[in-house]
Length: 103
Image 1 (cartoon, rainbow, N blue to C red):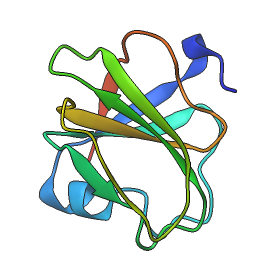
Image 2 (cartoon, one colour; image 1 turned 90 degrees about the vertical axis):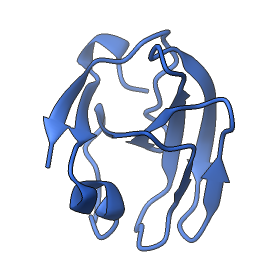
Image 3 (cartoon, rainbow, N blue to C red; image 1 turned 180 degrees about the vertical axis):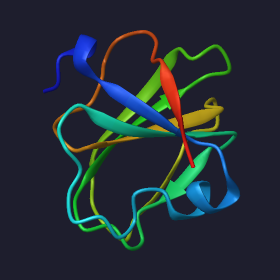
């Protein structure tokens, strides 16, 4: 599991970045994730590896973590306002995440 201080999370800020997410990547380095704002559901169509999904509320607090979500799945969290997609096994369990823009 990635050390919570070393987790680097990029933010999908454009429509295309939000639509594509991590689909099509062969792998995702440990300690790297993608924050998708303004969503309560995601799919893993086009994924080539399992994900941990870290669901956040409007204040950035973790409300749920779905671990080991396989490709071709759909997950949602009604209490979430965004999600961070992280390579399975490298999920984050701390209270808050800091993001960087990724277009």
